[in-house]
Image 1 (tube, rainbow over the protein chains, first blue to last red):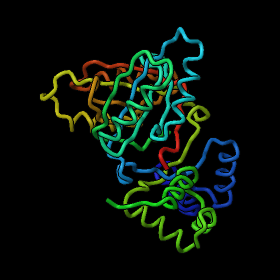
Image 2: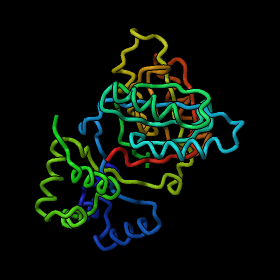
Image 3: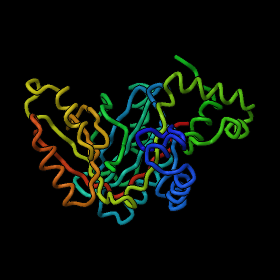
Length: 139
Length: 151
């Protein structure tokens, strides 16, 4: 199902050697346990007119006890932020930001990103190309 | 540029949450008939805005407790073939995404593993042994939130 979420129930049943009824019970069980959700549509932002994607690696001022909470809450309010991740390592938080073009990005960066609370340092990585993006698990 | 109106964007948002909804159900949400909703979804798919469908699996329940992002710098730019590197790294099953970036690193990789020991195995045996790999920085993912984006 991961490799091809469009496969129909009967085809899938053939591949794993189960009857359609037994397969559907198994899939239901995985859905009930929330192990399997979706499928969700994958949006190609570039096709929607968002040409720029930047990965912002943020270091926070950890002397502020609410640094993570305040920062993440404020970042959620920026519509062009499509991912918020937190880490152990050199980077504390990473934001994926999309924009229509460089002037649009510049505006978001100056007016909204730099206004986020408790930032100690920011590094930017500009996306050039996605080589692999299926996000499959090696099951 | 192709224009997309509010209804297109709402359909995208609904499908990004759950792509199993029928055109009829989606149409009711946005006030369109089933055929009209279907035509819009077909157009969004034909234009490549809907790039595909993806299952959302609970990694931890399936035994993948660790996700690490690697920033990789190639050691000898120009002498290593980017194509060769991209092909080799994309073939590693534990590598979920490969992004070519500009900045501190050349590539950004998302790697899943069962635990830290398993991650170390992937890093040492599969990634560090690839030709041209220079500086590698690892950050272990603690939490992740996907936002709907500007739609």
